Image: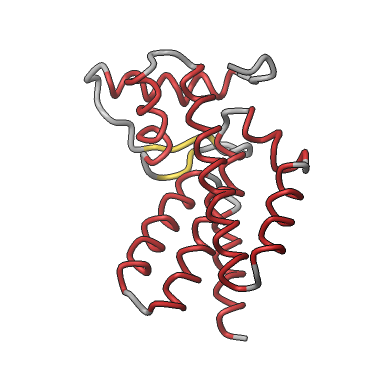
Length: 169
């Protein structure tokens, strides 16, 4: 595990909800707290954090999960760039992503705002996959991913409106 893994009190709340779910105390249907007060709707973050809580039984499991999710997102980004441009540019985008503190550092935090980049990469990848294959299963996965995004961070409520405007252009 990395020595630079970060853990704060609000992450403890989210992890505690996941542990309560694993222990059979019920699934909380509220999401993470909003800075201005209140909570986001839905249990997506609780369900996501319940995987490392169940498997590794430690907050360090969240670190492993976030590292895995970021590697997966960078792999999807590589495929996306290679499919739409070419292999050398895909390698360049991977190199630039791996050397960017804005991409690498959030994977060490283990908190829900750092999933914004990952969810956006998943959504763009799924939309591009649908555009290339016209398989409706990609749209279903895109819808599920968008629903998870709305439960992860409040900024997605604005980001999705922007995506919709881009589709109209």
